[in-house]
Image 1: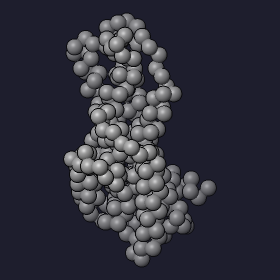
Image 2 (image 1 turned 90 degrees about the vertical axis):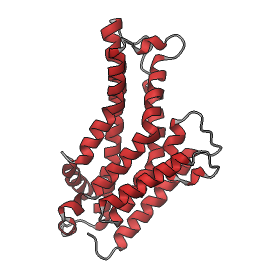
Image 3 (image 1 turned 120 degrees about the vertical axis):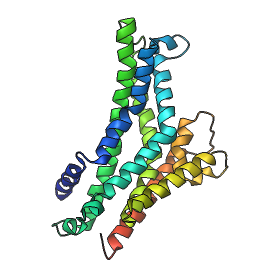
Image 4 (image 1 turned 45 degrees about the vertical axis):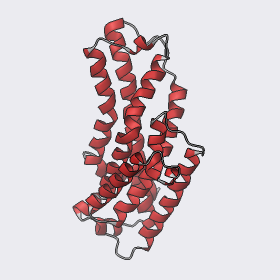
Length: 252
């Protein structure tokens, strides 16, 4: 019960914050571009048919544009912003004087980051639907010719979500460790750019920043279970983050 109250308190802090706006704008950014292009050129996803499954083609194109750079960059920014809320307002000491254990505080903050990422995925999925349906209603006066494969797209989104978990964990760790917001952003950006440049390196799987790009780019091949690697990285980095937070003498 204490965790629920703590989570609710932490979630309220994000209302109207930069991280919250980042999820909203970032989630609808790529779908909005596609919607505008469809309307300007009087195109719909039905134009893909019968050569491609309209929804699958639309879904894959949007995720390829999102997952390569914008998704990991958004996770880097959101994770850093949420953890930095207390540093920015100088309220860490107030948080630690509340009748809650350090474990509860840590888990609540970490859960907020996870839920914020989930919210971004929700906005992006809504954007995919809207950007596919509206042009069809305007120009074809009917819904897309193929039904929306909800289960397939849900599983695809879950896989992409798993690949971005290591980035979330390492950025949360860095942002708790360093008070300066730019340190977390700088390390994350360097890690992401270095991973994109080194995609052809045979040991690129060692970089947790490379997994979303591997999913995004069809030409990239890997001979390992990317989802197991991502989940193990996530668990290890989360454990390290928790230990460093608990053992830190001066918390904030």
